[in-house]
Image (cartoon, rainbow, N blue to C red):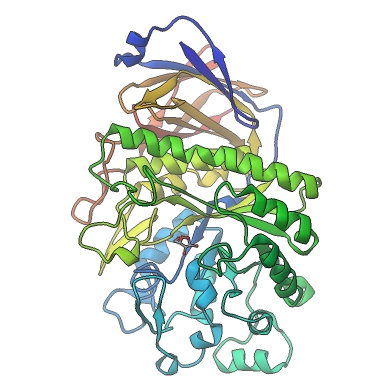
Length: 522
Ligand code: AHR
């Protein structure tokens, strides 16, 4: 049968190898795979920002999810709910993108400063048509990222804003002078400027951000980006609004016309089990949707490869970062919830999507230097779900937490030889792997078994290191749609895991449908 050879720092190749029949492949006998890690061939740094989050004014993402206000009975610190703060700190969230999303191109920052009771009430026209009271604005966002130790990535308004409004927002945040805007910030309670490392020039300019053609946006981008000025030690990277999925023409036009004016270029890609008109449910799905979702998630590799190739033409030194600043699963609206709020459950399937996608970003770490999963709390593929005073951690949260050692680690090549997992016309490598050496010199290995029925016996060799043991955690559950609820918050949670040593190799017994992350002891 076919075996797939995947090189962790290069494009996958397919080879044929005899020895297993189709009958064996369908049995519950463990599948066998090998992983060859080159600890002696360090690759690029896996930028911690690959583990970034996205928080939009959408549904209960900000209001209730993060911000409950100082007078709330829900325990809070200056209005931010304590349980969420604590959970996010454990994730070591490196960066948060805000305020949108589609919301960004209708957001006027002056609505969100000054005494809260005097802020204007607007309508959130994109998301549910609900009232936006502007209680969470510039101060609340920038104080929040400081509280969780993350960097700020602010998305500006091109669609309905002006270069002047954008320039003044950046000045309000960063000015250390006695300018009128710096004084206004001080009057509103913040003396010193905040750090502003990243600033996005609009969002989805091809769609909700203005339905623009790339030629038009490229010109607008150059104009708006010109006026983003800040003190030299606090100058944000300017992020150009990029392509929707496989719109390579958009990338070609933007890079050919505006590359010298950008420090980063973004793309968006969402994983759906089905089509936009009929996405599929977040729970209660069958194996066909398990297979379609995971194989659609793997498309990220092709997208990143092809957009990077275009970027290489205009930026061979790789000065410009590719930021996948929206990604994740998107299912049909959860019954009983406002469909405009994009609230969805999060299952073991989402955990595997997260692990496979993070592994792809590791493989492209040279160019992909930020990603922002959509979204942090209560929206789409969330880390955290809340229901009034209750909070649960999702399977996706657990993957992000297990992968923390990869933040800022050095990627190592990991070649995987694995049989495919096939179902309902979908075929993908059954086993995936990613390896890295962290900033303190320790080796880490992540393994994924996408097969929902068969254990995987994985033999791993680590060239260039004498590894004595491997210990860490495994995330799995009984059902493909296993998930945590407010009544049963620990249905899916990590458990201890150990590999065994056989000669100079490590042998991993991966449960079906699982993610394993281990530290390798030398
Ligand atoms: O994440 C939800 C929405 O998806 C964002 O607002 C938009 O940018 C994208 O289409």
